Image 1 (cartoon, rainbow, N blue to C red):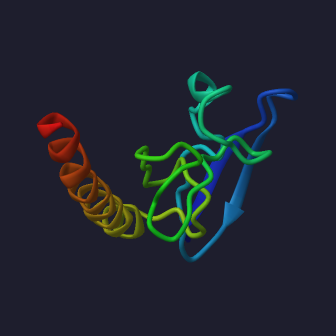
Image 2 (cartoon, rainbow, N blue to C red; image 1 turned 180 degrees about the horizontal axis):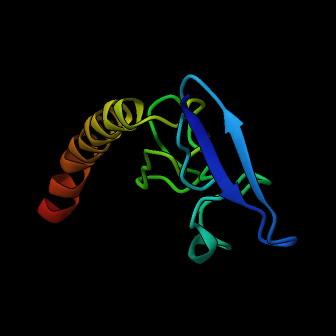
Length: 105
């Protein structure tokens, strides 16, 4: 028989649950306290982003499990990281002509 045994931290009682499989989830609360007062955060503390990974601060991008994207999975975070990196590149390349023009003046 396959089962999961665990101990209740409050009662110290041991339980055993018969099962066929298990999905392990590590943490539900993102570690974003240090961003408070900076980028916009959701009520759950997730970094609010648009479809390109941009935050509420122009030029600041985010990706991964700390953002408002649904389905916190490594493959989704990796894809969103690529999208945010490409969006940041696009943002910066569009700034370059303005900076060059200002430097020439």
